[in-house]
Image (cartoon, rainbow, N blue to C red):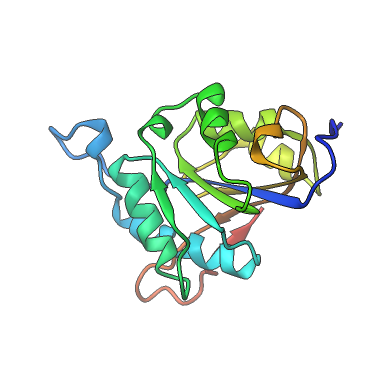
Length: 191
């Protein structure tokens, strides 16, 4: 059940888990780059956001290399990417830390993109979503894989009023890029 946050404009929090990362020997976790699959899936995430008419006014991104690369490849799919803030608090953040960052976003941003890591992002979506359309909430509970996108909608005057159970999870998308020469696979998997 959704707890009403209050009157105000429709706001959307778009939560994007970084794309699949590589595990090179001797590389610190924060510095791990995207794997080849991640380099294919991140642009597909950008295209999926455009197709869902869910381009952000502002992006908040973890400072981890894999999150930054996800942002760069996704945003390259749009004509004019929005401003991005790379915030070290988003790396390995839990729900209270993620909420602190989101609640500090400017009120002018009606659609906010948050790019980070699990388990924090999955926990955030499950905390904020009081309900969902279709089976989106069940899908997130089952698995929130790399490149997954959760779209949460709510009404509020500013981001500071976003809290547990106040949002509607309108969609969960798991975009997947095509391998070279693989024309049979779809660009995105909805679900």
